[in-house]
Image (cartoon, rainbow, N blue to C red; front, top):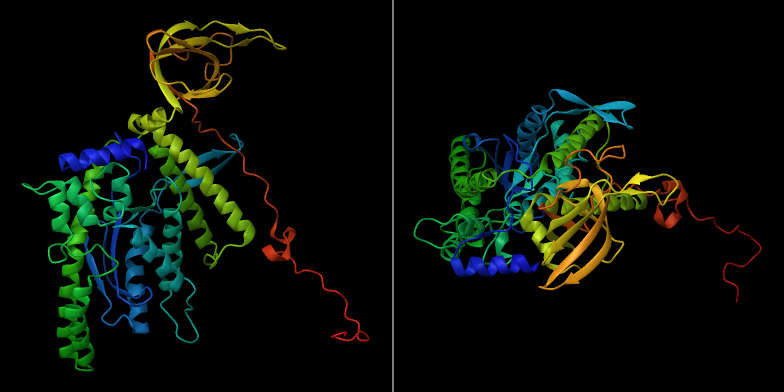
Length: 500
């Protein structure tokens, strides 16, 4: 936890209200996201019990599994869920746009929009991953066939679960994580995973402070858990008798219909409060302006969606149960690059996020006091434009001479530290030599060189492109990593198997 976030938590506890730790919204919000609030049966491995799903507050559709231990009922639930999810995905497969690649020598096409799936908390993402794994390998023929839409649903749920792991992606949103990215509460990180308590701090009812609202929300009789786990008292005292009544109805259609309606009523009562809280949380996020670089990250989600649509259309198989060694290394590299880029982009978009790096000495803010926009460096083979500016700051400057800095206001321009001179009054003069982002001539384009009096932030954070390393082909790896088997010694029949 950073110093600023710890301070914000202390202030939230003192004031009784969550404190903002961001000035802009750092994720894209779709106009019609699909909200999925799942419930699973306690004591069973990912046995779905019920779900509320829909793309608008008034479009909630309740899906119920009367007996989750019954395989046929579980996959009937999966088929019903597929009818909702797959049709919603198809709504986003509309117009496409041409995107230049290979420095303009070629083009590719991607959809103008992509689906966004919202679940209440990270446990909801776990439900997607596990339920996707249990459905994407199912056969549609032979013994125990399932509806043809079930394996496809499993592939798409796995796609959304994998996008949830990608830093900066907004294809899958765990709402508690999205909210705590922008606000700090006066409770622990574990307590922030409880959506009702979290929203108690962010938007408490009239007459209550955040701590009181959170304590009230933790009472299951006031607000049931946000799933997918259910409250044990509800399981033992309410759900178990209702399921027993459904089983006891046997083949009596009227008795079974009455028991099913009672189960629907009980489960809707468990899911409806969380459904309302999810949309309330989304409205809080939607009220914030989006960061400048959010649209670029959403373009990456649209690329991923387009690519997976092409994979499905081409008859591609489901995702493997586990990655091979090379695929795992490639995936890890992509996630590490995305995490670094996401951290830099958030800092560039948000002064509050950048303030954390200013505290650690990775950034400083100062005022331009001198500028030489016409300076030419003729020490090399040919003269080049290298303006210099002097920035005076009252913040500690921990970057060494020769370090390369970047300003969020001019991300395409590099600034090399030439001198760092402490002066009287706890100030520091930093002389920077600029390169890039000023045009191709020996005269800087207007506005590309900072002017005297301009206040700027410079940081060691940089979002430069790094080419991917060369990974070996699978057949080039040793047998321990999925390559060809190790050679065996030739067998000699004359040699005893167990020499003494």
